[in-house]
Image 1: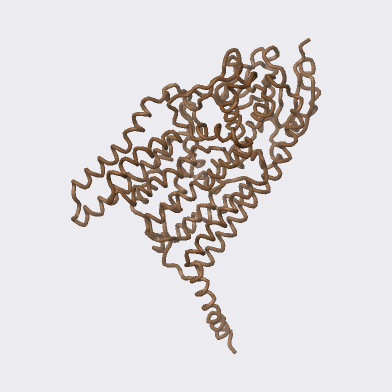
Image 2: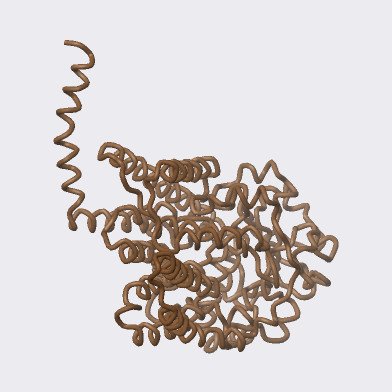
Length: 546
C-alpha cells in the first residue's frame, strides 16, 4: 500500500472523531463547562497565598484596614483620618471595609482579586455574545490575559471598571433600540457607578458606545437608509447617560493632582503592546504575545476575522491614544500602560474568527489551552515561592511594636544589578518594574505601625494623615535608596522623600528591603542603627537614641 493511501485512510478514520468532537463542543453544556473550568483554573493561585506579589496590593489592603478599623483603634486613629470626597477611584474603598467586618482581611482581599480576574472575562464574553448574536469560545481566550501586567501592579479599580464597562456597553447595544428610555436611565446610573470605580472605565465605555453608534449610522448612510432623527435620538440618549459623570468630573478635586509629564520611548510603547500577556516570565510572555499577534495578523490577511460594529474604529482610536498618551502626568503613573489592556479586551470581545477547518480550529484551541494552563501554572509557582519572602518578612519584623514609626529604604536595582538579576521572580516584572516595595504596608495591618508612604492622595483615596505624622510622610511614593540615609535626601530625586531630613529623630526603626544585596548589614551606619533581625528580603534596624 502506498504512503498516500495510508495518509488518506488515516484522515478518513480521523474525520468521524473530529466531527464528534465538534458536535460535542457545540453544545451549551460543553461551553458552560469550559467556562467554569477556565474560571476555576484562574482562581487556583489565589488559594496558594495570603499576600500575592502584586505591586500596590499590600498598600491598598493597609488602607482598607485603616478605613475599617482605624477610627476605633487608639493607635491608628492618631495617625489617620477618613477624608471622603467625589473621587473617581473608590471601587474597593466602598466595598472592602464592610467586608472586613465579616471576613479576615487577606481572605477578603483575595475574594476581590478573584472578582478582578473574572469580571473583565465575563464582560468580554457578554459583549461578544450580544455583538455577534452567537455563543462562541473565542472570548474565553480573554482568560489567557487575565494575569496581565496591570493585574500584577494591583490596579484593581481599573480592571473592575473595564469589566463593568464591557457589561454596560453590551446592555446598551442589546436594548437601546427596544427600550431607549430604560437604557438611558440605566445608563446614567451605570456611568455614575463606573465613574466612582475608575475614570478609564468611563472613557472605555464612551469609546465602545460612541464607536458602535457612529459605525451603525455610517453603514445606514452608505446604504441610503440613514435617518438623521435616529442619529439625534441616539446622541441625546448618550448625552443624558453621560451627563451625570461629566458633572462629577467637574466637581472632583482632580485639580489638586500635580506632577511632571513623562513619555516612554516609542520602541518601549510598541513592546508593551503585549502587556495583556506579560507576567513574571519575560521571554515566555513575549513569545505568547508575539504568537497571538501573528495569528491575528494572519487571520486578517486571509479574511478569517470578523469585527463587531465599531470595534475596528475603537481599536484604531485607542491605539492612537496610546501612542500620544504620556506615561506619567499630574502625579499619576502608568497612564499609557492602561491602553494595551483595553486593546486586548477588545480583541477578545469584539472579534470573531471564522472560516477555519475543524482540524485547524481544534489545533488552535489546543495551543491556546496549553498556553493558558502554562501561564497560570507559572503564576502559581511564583506565588508559592513568594510565600517564602512573606514569611521571612514577617519573621524579620515581628519585633515592631504597635505605634512604631518605621522608615523604609531599599537596595535598588541600580545599586547592585547582579543581586537583582537573581532575586525571586515575585519581586519584579521583567523588563518593566519592580513590584516589592509596598510589602512594608503589612506593618500597618499586622503591627499597627506607621510607614511614610501609605496611599493618601486626596484626589485618589479617602484617607488622610493626621498631624504630626503628615510631616514625616508623602501621599504616595516608594522607599528611597538606602544610601539616602547617609546623605539625608533621596539619591533618586524623581521620588520625593522630604522625611529623610533629620530622620534619626522622627522614626523608631529602619526597614531595609532586599537586604541580601547590602553586604555586611552590621556595618551599615553602626553608630546610628542597631541590627535587630535580617534575611534576604529585609533587615530591621532600631535607631540608637544615645
